[in-house]
Length: 298
Image (cartoon, rainbow, N blue to C red):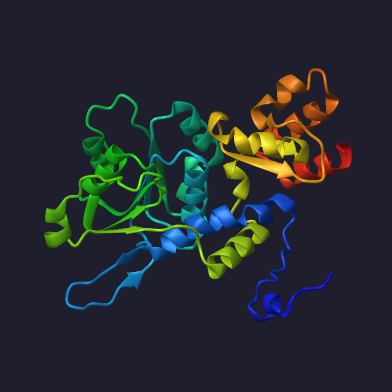
């Protein structure tokens, strides 16, 4: 293998010492969550120095966040070493929220010093009032994970003093807009940022955290397949529910939801084995599942 000198000079050849291939493959989406939290900032009255990052021991709300990127954000928020004292994860998808509760037990979050709340907002007449019950003075950091006007306006409405709103979701509509409380911008020092992706340092941090076992990128994955389904999966991605689709490029395997392993295992013992392995890991893909896959599929 011949590596161009630029790769070495720019530090782009990055070693990975983790247990599984999939962990490293998810470093990029995890770096997006990491970069988003590093990009937040806060201020102090009397000076003009921005204190970068989410507020340590603060209050955080992740809105429309029960999808794969939201789960990555929850994982990083809890295990970054800068975790908030309150983390509210809100969504309108009950099924996704139930999965999130299983992945992130509240007692484990409490042991880290964070009160973790998963809030279903479906059918709630006044979601702002409900969210403010958890933090009456508003939240220090709020992330909007969907390019929906109502989500952005809700994010603005639950900001506390000096609150930072990160518009994480990337809209495709160049005219996309939403109302913003400019009274709070002026008198309460609220501010809005938007982030797209992470930088090389975020990527390296992602790799370090997953290799050390502090974060688990598998929270993003709901489907597994081989190279034979890569094109079809890519073309139909908007129609396929769930989170990230993990493709092993040297295997032939139908795109399969992890939740379908038990049913498929009734006819194929390989899926039965994968079901047993993933069930022991809260229904998540894991290094043991990858190892089994690599030894039993071609």
